[in-house]
Image 1: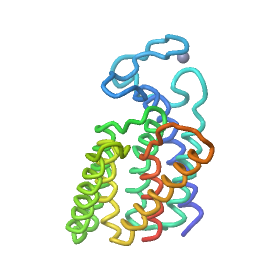
Image 2 (image 1 turned 180 degrees about the vertical axis):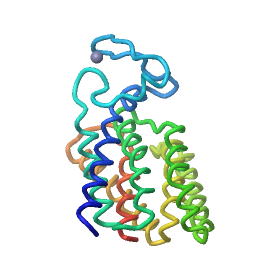
Image 3 (image 1 turned 60 degrees about the vertical axis):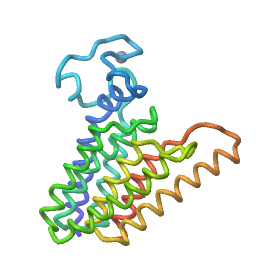
Length: 228
Ligand SMILES: [Zn+2]
């Protein structure tokens, strides 16, 4: 594994991360509401069409450095642990909608369908082309987790939303290409992380809903890396 590969992966992460604040800001709205069309601090209207979405730097007012740092670090970690394999660019690309989903879920407890779909296509199609022999197990993992999470979501008061079900099924499908141990570690880690956060909130007597998306996404990274 060369340092060039790590630097290139970090640069890709940083460059992609620079474009995330505007998209995340516009999509961080309560369920059923349209995307934000203006900045709530200075009232400036965002340009209509794609020009209002594709924008490097802060969303409008404020800072935009956090997604750049997170995406760059994620790119570096993926490059170090996966090494020069054909799957590396796929996972670097998948990390872009992944970080975006985590940002939006942290902001408003929502995982937009279109972004989850984008993650499934951006990563699922090339993985299926690279490992056609793993399509069966990947689909089985996606169906298994999707069905289990749907059953949990339908139980009253379990705090699992349909967005979590769809993201869980998508991530299980993608991890399925890396093997069943990756699926087990990915989802085990996600539930451990979520449990730790819930316990911490309970101990500190804070009552607020915990988004599950970031734990699912981080857990999937752990699953992926154990399979590397
Ligand atoms: Zn503004």
